[in-house]
Length: 179
Image (cartoon, rainbow, N blue to C red; front, side):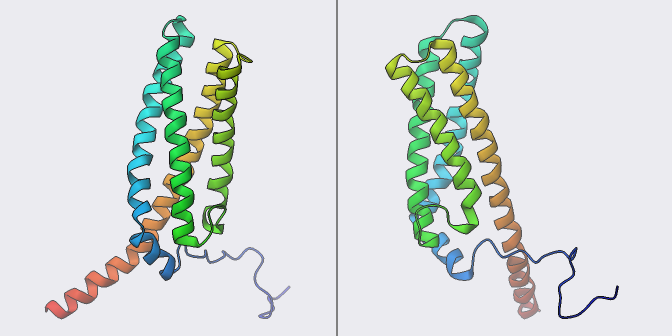
């Protein structure tokens, strides 16, 4: 059957909407919270890596419960901090605190991460979970965090790729005037 021009092709690739409009990109670049997120994200990963090692050590040897617990508490504090500052950043850039369309799924998975960390805190503070169960909840939180971090890294990459043609165009046009 021939293609009708008034109907889009079913299997035609869809043009992706840009991650940021020019106004959103300008607000992102002007927001102090962009730098805060840029500092907290690698800090959170470092805390996660140390804590993961301590949790796995406890689970494999039965030693180091206190160190593992303190590390999980620090990771949880950093997570809550990055979530609050991230919501402020999202408001600065997109005009809403959470679930801006560009970051909907990242925010959704972030809430799973927060929920698991909060379940850990509940289990620790109430005694509802024994030491091993607490560590397994922490591992579930950490696995979800890794997936969430991957989402954000892919978004960061997409934003950089999206901006690359603009930079290349600027360089090419400035070279034209340099001749």
